[in-house]
Length: 116
Image 1 (spheres, helix red, strand yellow):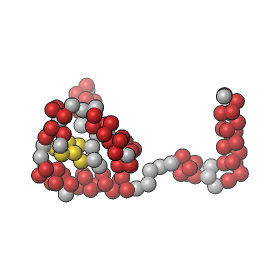
Image 2 (cartoon, rainbow, N blue to C red):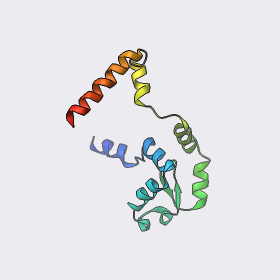
Image 3 (tube, rainbow, N blue to C red):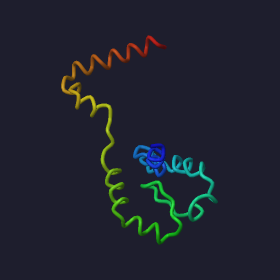
Image 4 (cartoon, helix red, strand yellow):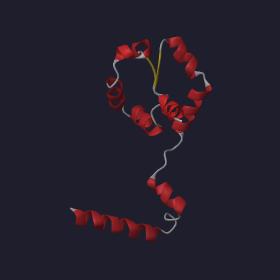
């Protein structure tokens, strides 16, 4: 049973929200890349797919990856709008009654002011 658990997390890549932050800010991506030693990475870290957060040994493998199904699926998921608190409130039914939603926001603001 232990080996199954290990294999599920063995090839885990960065989550979509982390990759979105990488795409928005080159500083965020540079900070992530600086945590890895380049001599330990395939191709000395020169061939990197930002959308999938994977390193490749040469440009041919990177180009083949970009033509593949997994890369295209990941790009499609990144183009979709990220879920927000407003969308989740609307799904539960809180976003339909604007007065109730305003009352909840006022309560939260009051609690924050009391904490300060």
